[in-house]
Length: 311
Image (cartoon, rainbow, N blue to C red):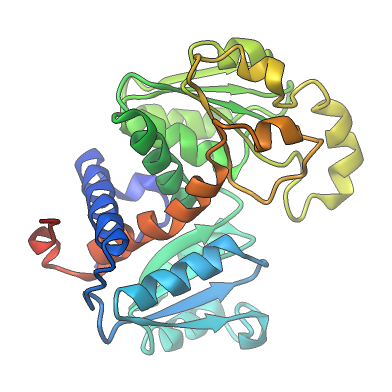
């Protein structure tokens, strides 16, 4: 049994296989072919945080694959009414896979330690690996390949940017992040990436234009994530010079696309002009959450994945 708590949990070849499955399943759906590959499988969506894309994409994806899903909100008492190990051992008996959206990465690790179900990280404070799968699938669809490309992230060294940095390292991409001093990706995580993917090309700068130079995609996220509302005013001041606008997009490659994990705060981290421009791929990116996660679910839950192909 395998878990997917971060991209450290899959090899480079396994990541390629997940992308391959995602492409195949997306093509099948486009042809209105929906095979019950996961018939009888049940997913539990265990969420501590509100969600649109993560919840709906996993629920729809499981349904399209012939499985079913249960939404498990705060009322189930995860980490509140009983010891974490007791909760994990019990819930694991009911479900084939549990998708967790948690405030603390440690809670997901505890669940994986004690539950007998496959565990997928749907978002934690440390990383957001499912988002990174969708992001790179979107870039690959646009440019046909990942190796040798450069992705620029303008914003906080947060869970999204950490997963992107690792995803780029695993696919031979260059990852550049522009963040104010004090908001960069922590050195401990970068050391883990280097250990996992020696020679990883990761650049950190305080200059957005420098990060954008040569990039095929410009990516940003909100300046204050859920749980950081008290820091909103300070972060708005600190990130004032890190807005993605038309001028910054022009510093990237001529055909560069714009990405955002959403929800966005238009007029703050990104302008309306960029959000709605012809090279914005935010809608396709959000759609690819479902397709990438379907590839992941099939890879994790089905031993016969090699039998899946598109005619």
